[in-house]
Image (cartoon, rainbow, N blue to C red; front, side, top):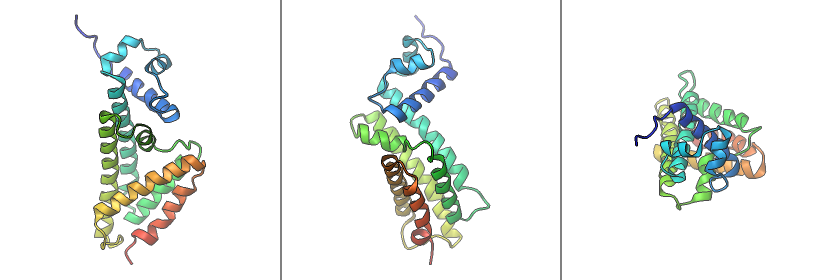
Amino acid sequence: MARPKRNEHIREQLLDQGLKLFLTQGYHGTGIKEILDQINVPKGSFYNYFESKEQFGAEVIRHFTKGVIANMSACLHDPEDDAITALQHFFEQEMHRHEDLKAGCMLGNLGAELGGSSQLCQQAMIEGFQGMKQQFSFTLQRGQSQGKIRDDIDIEELADFLVNAYEGALLRMQVEQSVQPIQQLSLLLNSYLAKT
């Protein structure tokens, strides 16, 4: 018997609902039935799109990361901003975006929850962090060519520092229910990254 034809709209709904519930309830706290009930899709249909919950989890992570990278790209690559200004705008935007929803970053949340227990999800998270690092690297390279970003530390190390600092700020923001950690990160950019 042939498999039913996939509907990309339903697949997108499944990913959106999975993202919403993973952010609020975590991976283990979210059941497939709960996701399906929220969008009125029969249980058997789930397996037309995903082989398992683990594979679904990895795809939700990629879905989330795609949005994060698009947002970073739009904010960090404004041709009118120098690199320091672009980074400050990005972190200020993140501070405002998280003022009401202090749920942190799904990569950090699921990383803490799953650790290395799921290779599929772990690989998707690694790809997500690499995508974020790449966006920061592009901006830092632009800043070095503008003479605005310090060149005594390797760009890859600076980009890793920004990813780590950003994820740490999001985690503290979630725990403390305050945007102050992101605000502090934004304020430190000039003193740490700027070429003197």
